[in-house]
Image 1 (cartoon, helix red, strand yellow):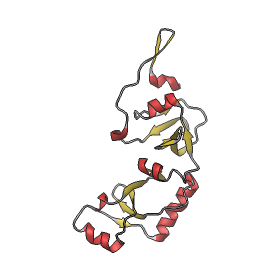
Image 2 (tube, rainbow, N blue to C red):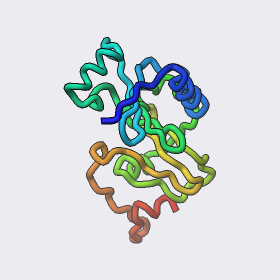
Image 3 (cartoon, one colour):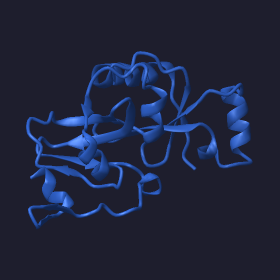
Image 4 (spheres, rainbow, N blue to C red):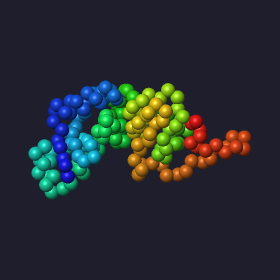
Length: 170
């Protein structure tokens, strides 16, 4: 397993990017980069040296919580949106009830007007629902498959005409 402990200068760069995009100003975790550009946060009492020794015996990727994925920019994980919820003040996109029904089942949101481009934190009422990517016309869903609601949406009828759930946002 390729493991890289993120040093202070690199952590500061990550923190500056998170502050710029989401308003997150404090990362109170030791950051560990693992495969697939994933960054995990560890807040336990073990030191870096103790973790290195431990990594000889177990898979280090099991330590800490998956926090970010570094693609072109940083995307918060589903759990990180909850961990950093008190700090997140930027790039928030609020959805309504019908959009929530689509989103929680893993569907992208289409046909929306005036969507900001880039990485967004999805919000429904008082809860954050993870991050998404917007190209200005659609919002791509990144909810992990194991966390999606598996029930089907009920068909919507207006004046005896069926409207598919995906057409609700067109």
